[in-house]
Length: 521
Image 1 (cartoon, helix red, strand yellow):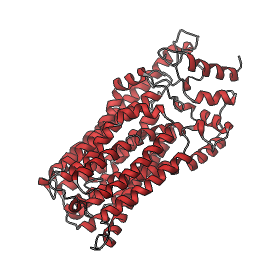
Image 2 (cartoon, rainbow, N blue to C red; image 1 turned 45 degrees about the vertical axis):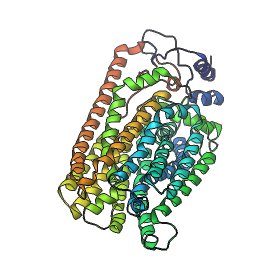
Image 3 (cartoon, helix red, strand yellow; image 1 turned 180 degrees about the vertical axis):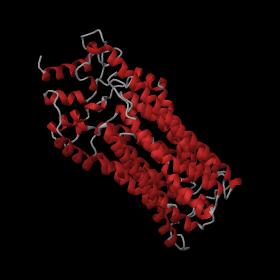
Image 4 (cartoon, one colour; image 1 turned 120 degrees about the vertical axis):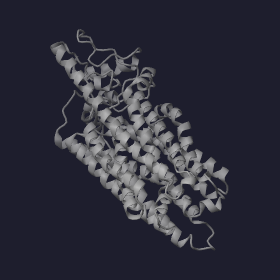
């Protein structure tokens, strides 16, 4: 049988066999190929269609493909992530542009308006596991983006506490698919070494959103909020503009963004096959639309799933300092409402520099977690400054907290590169997003009205949480190193008896099933 025939044979067997997966090395004593899972990775279709043997991709071809992928994939990924961040944090800008007075909020009602978004996101996360695999991914994302844009614009019509709660809950449900989808997109299009930096780029748009949102809200407050005859209040302008913009981008996403490399119109058939060879080293292909219960169970029982989830949960409890309560917190440091709209923007600038800089270093040195820990240490110092000082020193501490998102990008990157198996990847990502939502539900409640304007108990909790999540990163790295060492020792012990099935990278095996898989650290 020729190599080209073997590609077709593996694709055929992967689509017809049932049963549990076996590890990629089959068994050290077996020479027969391992029985793959039903519903292998879509990458096998591209290999079979190309009818080409496994080929090495030269550096020039790889560079040309990467440039082409970056040009067609990254811009829209960044734009949508920018919008999802500014859309959910628009409530913070609304808090100092009249929404509290217009909708007659009192006590901790604003806290619950901020939190209810994450209840909606949490409620829709488990359905997202199945829906992401059931429908074409880009089309599913497009529909969600368009819906949340319409819901955001609808917030401008809210006149009461109840209507705000309803719209914010539905807005959260519509945004539930974003993080899991972005993790999948990143793993489909980039090699392990490229993923950390690309995640850093699209996640850094949160910093850009922080800056743009602050300047935009300041302009609205200055020119609309000060006009008593204006037909719309400042907060209504903010919601309408951002909502309509998001809905338009969601519609464009449907027509522009491919569901996977298999359906990318900007790549020729030869380039698609070359791309599959380019990412072969990821040991996870481009995804399968078959839901696999064994992978779902493995995701729930893998300790790394819960180490990721702990970081995400604990890190997002203080998240209100950058989202819902950013302006209120800066105002409590001794600045006016309008000043707070401008003074929050350097946080976004620092976040961009930290994210892009540290993820670039991580890519070059191939040490993601050490780079991440380096970004956490100044944030711990910043949290202490916020808790113990006021005015300028406290504001500097607030800006230093912008280094914490490097951990979020690292976890997202690890979910993309270090979690294999389509169902497992989606499940781990969704559990992480659920941890994110629970942390953000708790977050506004740490800023109790009785603690205003300094909110000292919340600031003390931030110091403790930043220390704990840094320790969590150390533990995650230890697990990666230990698993990699065990697999190398296992391979060395087997010697020549170690057998690896041809095209095992595209049999949709998990990182625990595939003994050839190595974790990026």
